[in-house]
Every structure is written in structure tokens, then in C-alpha cells.
Length: 130
Image (cartoon, rainbow, N blue to C red; front, side):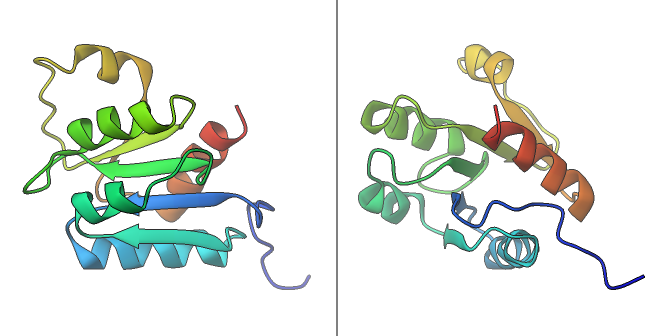
């Protein structure tokens, strides 16, 4: 038997990752790129991510919930005004503030940090291929 094949074949799919921790961005980007996602863009600053965001540019947004300056829910709500078809998955370290964001919790997928590579790919593939 040869080497392991990539789990995905989504080289044309574009993913945006926004997390204020550069190590998280780097790790997720590497895993996704090594498994067939050629276009993975990362930002540590949600404001810069929002400034560069355009309708139809990304197939999936992976947004950290807890970031300084603007949390992932606020970023998502602003991005949805630009592209209301944007698919999203939120990163969480565990604490979930359901308060004013109850609808977002009920309608979207979450990745709990830390995550195994296989589980990350399974979730990303599921969301992108819906």
C-alpha cells in the first residue's frame, strides 16, 4: 500500500480562518492545505478580515468566538450583511455565551479547541458540501 491519501479533494474551495492566536491559524491552515484545500486565508485581526471580505469569495468561514476588539459572533453578523450565503463554523475553547447569540448557536456548527485533524476535516467537509 502507498502513502495516505488526502481526505478531501476540495482544492478549489476557499476557506477563511480568523483567530487571534497565530498558532491556531497556522495549525488549521497546514492541516487543511495538506488535505486538499489550496486556498486557506488567515487573519489574527477580525477588523482586517472584515475589510478584505467580499461576497462569494470564501466557501467557508472559520471564526474564533473569543477575540479582542470584535468577537466571532459580531464578525459573522457583519460578514453576513456582505454575503448572506456565507457558511460558517465557530471555534470555541468551551465557554459558550448563548445570551444574545442563541440563534447563531442553533443554526451553526462549532469546533471545540483543541480538535483532532480528522474531526476538523470531517466537520469542514460536511459544511462545505451541504
